[in-house]
Length: 211
Ligand code: B12
Image (tube, rainbow, N blue to C red; front, side, top):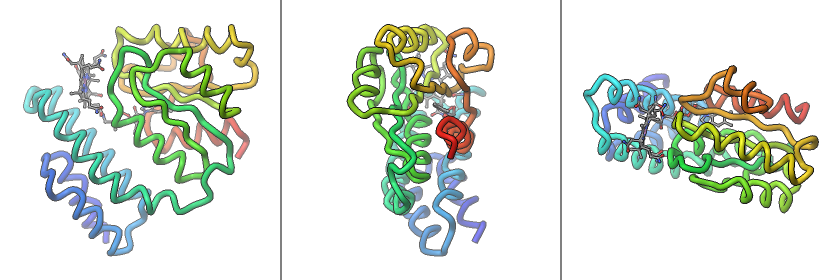
């Protein structure tokens, strides 16, 4: 069984794009837990990031890895979302203004919706007023902000201030995550939590709603 998990992880890291979706399918057919497969894909992507940082991979490789992840997720998502969607409340999720990284955000969204949240995914490069609008329209219980670019961290503060100005801050919890986020940044921006991966994201949001 565990063999498929390792193969999925390796296919992502090695950019063996044609193999990712079929391997995810094989892993599901062999009875692997969809959440464990998701974790393997995540781990593979961490490997891609490391190879980029060491200079072995280039930007074009990152784009390819993103495509491979999307194809794998398409196979996986129907199996992850078989549970009781939306019962824990609505979460507004996005990547902040000025930032288009979405692989981590999508993984967090997939994990949250597979564990009972209704996920309102606003996409990437999202201005603060759109977040406020979505919180209001969906009566959301929490907001998740993904931010990977250090120059864009002020976009987090902009969301916090916009929610305050709209009178919504007291009734909503905010979590951040992504490569450049730290506990110190969370404190400075006035958000409630910072999450290192999609599993921790679920723990944080469960803590928010008391699930
Ligand atoms: C893939 C990638 C890209 C791809 C993105 C493809 C896509 N569709 O997302 C492309 C090629 C487009 C790209 C572009 C750029 N990138 Co880039 N990119 C990366 C890379 C290698 C991996 C990111 C990734 O997908 N990781 C895998 C996922 C699974 O991990 P993750 O995003 O961290 O998410 C997990 C956790 O953080 C957490 N999480 C994430 N969001 C949230 C939210 C909440 C609420 C919670 C609780 C948890 C949580 O859970 C996720 C799942 O486990 C990182 C390196 C790195 N160390 O992160 C650089 C990196 C983020 N990029 C970087 C840069 C500089 C850029 C560019 C400016 C490059 C350029 N010169 O053009 C552009 C910026 C474009 C823009 N305006 O946004 C820098 C940022 C440096 C900084 N600190 O500012 C990094 C760190 C690389 C580096 N070391 O230089 N990039």
